[in-house]
Length: 109
Image (tube, rainbow, N blue to C red; front, side, top):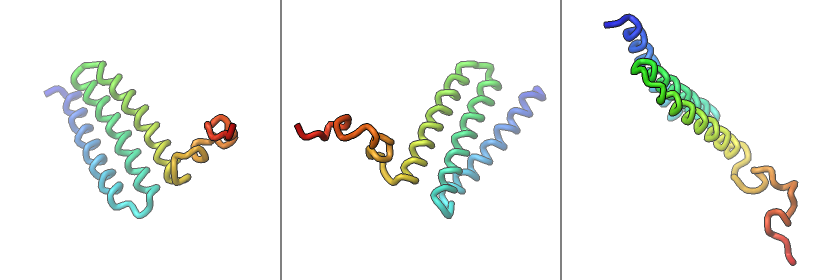
């Protein structure tokens, strides 16, 4: 067994342990922000695990998947935090109130 492979295997096991702890925190978090932080941590550890698996197998196409997953994780976290702070995804939450009613199609002609 190669020493690099052994180190990467131990790293993968440690990442899986922290992912399971993040899931426990997401289920038991006392506040919604603790749960959001735990889900963000789980997504980050997933990207890290994909990168380690890519290095272990010598396949660089997994890195493209890791980048795509990290982008989806970021967009999802921004949407989730906007929903928890604003309460909905309506025009007010999206910041379109400055456009006026004409831009939203609610004008009475």
